[in-house]
Image 1 (tube, rainbow, N blue to C red):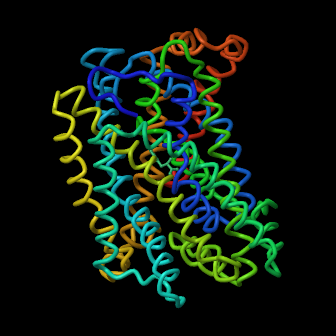
Image 2: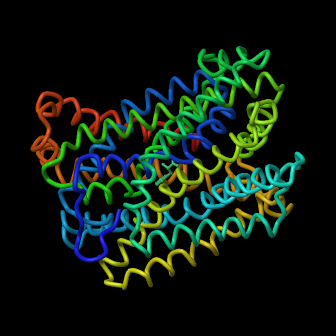
Length: 445
Ligand code: PHE
């Protein structure tokens, strides 16, 4: 996405779907979904996740896109356009902080993905089977590298160029994933993993699992921090919000499920622990590649494509924050991007050090989460996105008015007039109440 001079518009429906899908599809699907599913006990989590996607996240997605399209603004500007001077703009600021918070640790994992890609290239060139050893300096450098890459893309306004590439590369990522899935399924004992992933065991359900599922739906679909709002602001008044939003949700969910099928059969076949948390895919996939004919090549391809998928997501995170400084404070674009990128670097350093195994950071414990990195992921990725989505619904209900929101979607959707009432019911009751109940359970209320 780029809107360097004046506000751009997607030239076609596909332009928006590609960019929004680019934001949605990323480490959230392939790294976070399996790790959270692993911690949350498998099948029952997956079922709750799918329910949350359909009944909570999709309605919020439509609300967010339509608010963006109606106002043609960044998150703060959108609230101010609907009601000038409103206190709701603080919600916009929260969105910006959340974006920065997520970017700060997301880029650490993205850096690790690049590191794996580079390591496999070294293995290919020099032979041997050395595993990637995440040294402290290495982790910091790869993290900084990924952040600078994101900054350069956003400064250059070449997001659309990247998205055009992603259009070719993402299908290739799917094909590569299918290959890895097949290899994993051929390992003896893999069916246990399939069962564990797809057959709900309801005894594993509790408040924390439900919160994880709901938050993962928001995280994976880039909801609750204004990314979809910002992308929606570039959507032309002629395009169908319902169709676009639904496509993004379908693509994104399909990739998450495939990622689960790529990881868990192998986890069980190889006797690994599904609940090993944030390092899950990095522990398991190399072992699958080692079993594969041409595994090194597949590994390079996979980690490269995953880096591209991560880049289209980090770009969206940085873009949202940048758009505020450019639109509202009239900063020059490149200044805004570098300042935000620099701040993110500073905020992300402790996460990187935790990933590199610095004891003082990896032994921190709050909210039942251990390690600085996991705490960041919990606070921004779980709590803040859920809270942001809740507040967005309340804004829709009490300030903007769901009738007006509906009219915005209806104006271009042939189907929406028939289901607009259902949508309003979900945004008015189902989404806010479920989010409140789930958050309240978490805090033991
Ligand atoms: N949805 C992205 C992913 O799944 C991450 C993201 C979250 C991007 C929130 C923007 C906003 O990788």
